[in-house]
Amino acid sequence: MAVEVKIPTILRTYTDGQKTVNSTGSTLAEVIDDVDSRHPGLKDRIVESAGLRRFVNVYVNDEDVRFSGGLSAPIADDDVVVVLPAVAGGAH
Amino acid sequence: MTRYASLADSVGHTPLVGLPRLSPSTSVRLWAKLEDRNPTGSIKDRAALNMINVAEADGLLSPGATILEPTSGNTGISLAMAAKLKGYRLICVMPENTSAERKQLLAMWGAEVVSSPAAGGSNEAVRVAKKLSEEHPDWVMLYQYGNPANAEAHYLGTGPEILEDLPEVTHVVAGLGTTGTLMGIGRFLAEKKPGVKIIAAEPRYGELVYGLRNLDEGFVPELYDDSLISSRFSVGSRDAVRRVRELLEREGIFAGLSTGAIVHAAMAQAAKAHKAGESADIVLIIADGGWKYLSTGAYAADLDEVEEHLDTQVWA
Image (cartoon, rainbow over all chains, first blue to last red; front, side):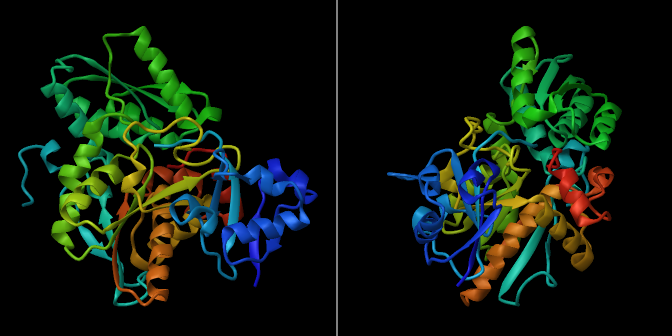
């Protein structure tokens, strides 16, 4: 089972500059643990004791995990996980 | 009824059309609510008109008043139409990187445009507008992000229209900007048909500037209540452009770019229901037509080029 995890520029120091890393896991927590096992330190930048860090957004197939179970969000084969730092934006 | 006493009276009452080619099956159906059929071509006519009507009723607006609003286009055009009909002066604050068509349209409608720095997106436009408002206390800022009359327009109009035309509705997908559309529809359906899923779709910009409203960044529209939202999709420009082209190619609907994000989220939801063997009737909101975005090249240019171009400009 392969899951693609997209890493934001600000966290690529942990992945030797790689934009995407492949991972496995059936929940978001498992995927993050798996990535952290090969890129130590990454998990701490995404997760804190209460769950996802406030200034990090994580999307599974474009869906915000905050509405779909957070770290318990189910992950399936071929899913794409996007990690994004929370920064300014706007339209309308 | 298709005869109205004036243009303002014709706002709303938009058609709901099936999308048989984009729907995964006959039991998972997609429906499009064509808000581009409003007088100025976008869903914002509903909110603009209701905000002005309520401000008049509250005694905030009197003949000859100046209205000030941070907007990257559609709300400005809608307000300009209403202001013209009612005799108000309108000043719009918008990011300097909004498309040329929008600035031309606003000028054509008689609005004055103040540009805010591109880098801050709409958040910066809001900041600039608030500062101008402090300098000119006699100007009236309707402030779509915090004005309950914005969401009320959808509570009174869009929501009831959807339920009347499609009593079996299971999901509604709309853009997340001021959040007025989703809050108004969501609140109406929560009362009248609890269980309908309310899905937010937001365009995602490049990594440094993305999201209609990044809720962690400290700018949460005062109207926003996340308890009314069932799920939230953030859609990259490439997917949004792909979907907006697909909508035109397969269903003949020429929609604006933020609608591409809405279609993408609606199709993801449809695929989920189909995979789970559930039936669904999913309404998606066509927020505006594609005319104002032609200069972005989104409808014809190479996808890679469009993606790069859109990541650096406001396209919703």
